[in-house]
Image: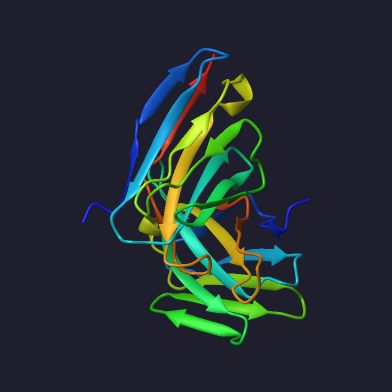
Length: 112
Length: 114
């Protein structure tokens, strides 16, 4: 049981490049979410999903896209990277929004 | 505007003493609250939760108190240990409505001094 896995662990992008952060969970959780962590800002919700085929915006969705074609996977796409997207990104999953969330180890992204 | 606030960015406590971490929220729809602990270079891990139908929940050294009228909750750690040194996040959700987001506060960095 791997829990929540995220790849890559580290990534450096140039401004304007695109990439996909991968997230997968093997706990059959319906609820999955993406957060970014910035100093003094805590964990801010980017996008979330309450089940396969259903996604919605969080607090800071601009510049990011998500899709949820399976229960297990919830990739986060950066369309055109900007220095303001330099952050640590965490994926999380749970049975429902109010339940304990299980977090992945994070992806540290730097945009130059 | 932050819906979940943790107004103390950092806190230092002597080993063996009580640590009290505070959290305030503004959205009256929130009815379920969770605390997470985060070590550097790791993902957050769940610590303890409380539903709005309770005013206290206890798990070993950790107790969470909820004051609904004041929209305030606090996490008490007794006795504090050096291994408790971490960032603590308060989170809130609204389980009984269509508002299905989970909102986190900015975190409080706790240092327990041996």
